[in-house]
Amino acid sequence: MMSDVTQIDVAIIGGGIAGLMLGNEVTRRFPKLHTFVFEKEQYLADHTTGRNSGVLHSGLYYPQNSLKHRLCLEGNELWESLGREQNFTVQKCGKFIFCSNLAEFEGLEKLKEQAKKNSVPGVRWATANEKKTLQAYANIHDAIFVPSTGFIDVPSAISALERAILINGGNILKNNQVSKIGRDNQGIILETRDGSISTKILINAAGLWSVALGKQIWQNGLEDYTVKGSYLKYSGDFYRESFIYPCPLSNLKGLGVHSTFDVSGAIKFGPNVEDVSTIDYALNLPLLEQMKTEITRYYPHVGLEQLSPDYCGIRSKIRSKGQLYPDFWIKGPAETKVPGYVEICGYESPGLTAAPAMARLVVSLLEI
Ligand SMILES: Cc1cc2nc3c(=O)[nH]c(=O)nc-3n(C[C@H](O)[C@H](O)[C@H](O)COP(=O)(O)OP(=O)(O)OC[C@H]3O[C@@H](n4cnc5c(N)ncnc54)[C@H](O)[C@@H]3O)c2cc1C
Image 1: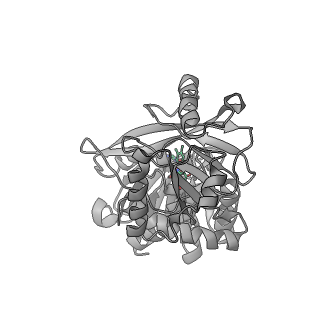
Image 2 (image 1 turned 120 degrees about the vertical axis):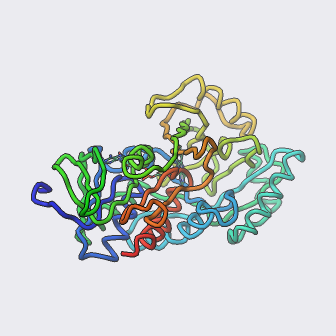
């Protein structure tokens, strides 16, 4: 089909949540443009998007006014309406964040203060009754409740977005790797399975591959810093009304080992944190064994024999000038100096939650 197409309007590289949300936004707002999403795998969302916790985050952990904070807060709201419109589950079940002793209480107070600064709605101290209920599951001294946290039925959301893009007249080309990007006098050139394609706009939403791809068209100066997160699934009984997270300790790289459940009610613990240098989804079983010690500390009633290895995902963190870059990296033509080009790198958590707001931001950078 593509062999006839020499010129298109919009190319989006990546069929994860970033690329699909962008495809939805572009085709909904500009149905007359010829828009194509390229995905190198046979299936959509086969990498990070299909391997996360599926949590709709509230936006409380991130530095005030960072992209992570602003896009997460806005995305949290937008997902609810998207789920309603496109008929998939987005449920705000809320989350308790607890400390286990007086020494950790200050951390909890700081988090509550941060929630206020970040305008996260409705955050409050847990009631005595709630704490009593939760003590049957976790080692709780005190807790706050964050009502806007929830979960997304990710597989259904992916199918719904795919459908919406096609209905809006867009195209999704699976099994179609963009092997090269470059520029000529006309604009941006892509090498694909179907030959060379010229596009006016290119959005690089290639997840773990976006840094390397970006370097083909401008000097983004970034380095990948990939961190694996693995999960244990739990077949025992657990609290399923809201999530229960420990208060993250200041020396942690993630949010601390926590419990979540998905739309089917399946409980999992994780993700843990493991620096890796390759994209390999094999589970590190000794490290998962170690996670059980942490689980016992925070959730003493969990039956360890009912925990079993589940799956893992890889966080696409980045370094700039040798330092960890703490925010999403979203650069449009004004910064890349490449007309029509936007790149999204370091799009780690809360990238799922932020996606609808990120898509709006990217479109505004392009001034289509
Ligand atoms: C363990 C873990 C837990 C997480 N939990 C949460 C959570 O609970 N809530 C939350 O909000 N966020 C969470 N995140 C973050 C979230 O999952 C990511 O921010 C998001 O999925 C990134 O989406 P993406 O589209 O950028 O990347 P991906 O989903 O990886 O999509 C990129 C796609 O690009 C394709 N691609 C790459 N190169 C090419 C090419 N050259 N040509 C064609 N296609 C190409 C890839 O095959 C891939 O499908 C978590 C992340 C991890 C790792």
